[in-house]
Image (cartoon, rainbow, N blue to C red; front, side, top):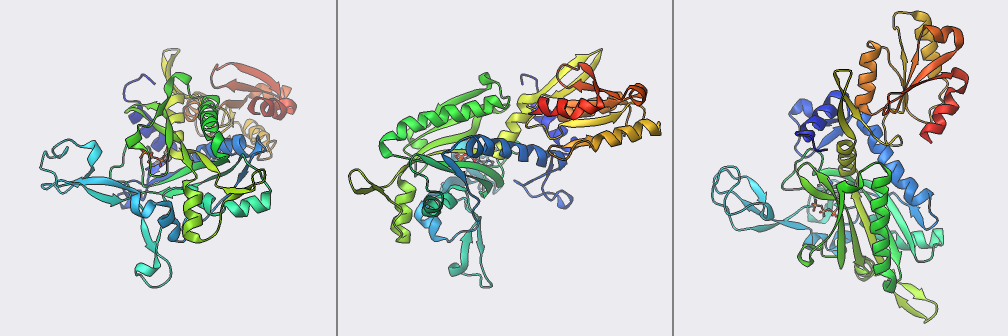
Length: 433
Ligand code: ATP
């Protein structure tokens, strides 16, 4: 974490080992887009799985949802995104580059040229539905997943029979035509969000707001991010999004400084009220005690999958000297690690050892990712698995042919244990639980 150039090391590791590549790379790339390779897709999936497990499976008051990326454009009119989801930008009169007004001073940061007056720039991507490309067919790629939840509020209520307080969770792609992208995958134009809309009685919103800040903070910590690398920062009034009454960011100490991982906002009843008004469908609830209608308040923890992934990688990265050699280890939490177990033959030119190693891989029914690798010497294979964060390596040697025991090596302690092949699956299942 304190090491110099950590971001460069992570970018290089991601590319070298197949976590993340620049989008459309063979065509020179497309700025603000990234492709996730065989290990990146596993890490990303594991992050979303851990989030889903913590919110949907381990609780009784939250259900899941998966809604369309393209929605009726009236959704964005009601939500205020057509009018208000914009950044102020300035152009350089000399080199014509564009910048967000809040990140530049008086002159262009690239060529020191004079800047134009600032103007509003809407961050939503536009496209068209159907065969005619005009204003009546204009639609937007969603800039947040939340609106899919609000427009389904009544559907969920009637089908799941939940009562306040309850939540709806959704993860998926979101798109923003960001003016300034950068810091690797920290800010891109296509990314994934994990959003929870938690509906509560208006009078209880503040208490639930504080509750969710703590819950979300603990989630990052449970998955391995060091407590001292996270802070909670309350938004100043002028920073608040148009729908929010109050908002706290969970920030991680990224190499470029503390930056937002997740925002936890009190969205009040803004969205349900607006959708009721614009759609003509009443999304209010009946208070049975007073027999009056009211709109629930919404507490929204909204995090980015890609930003979480970057933080998990940075926090897990470590370098140490072992017997005079540098060892790079990703100390990822086992539930996040892309590969859980690697099966390695000690001697790759011994067919009997190779065969036994391959057979051992077949003991695992596919509940987690187990790989077989014989493409290098054992020292090299260990280094490779350490660098991608594989918690356990299983090594098959000459002795294994006789006593049917293999060696399990722990990534973090590098300690080795001899285990009978018959007990291996149970042993690792328990460790990886
Ligand atoms: P920022 O201030 O960094 O632009 P934001 O406050 O606009 O972020 P929110 O609207 O609160 O972000 O979105 C919720 C989460 O979605 C963020 O905490 C972040 O993790 C993620 N996110 C938002 N924009 C991007 C982006 N351009 N690239 C990657 N992740 C993003």
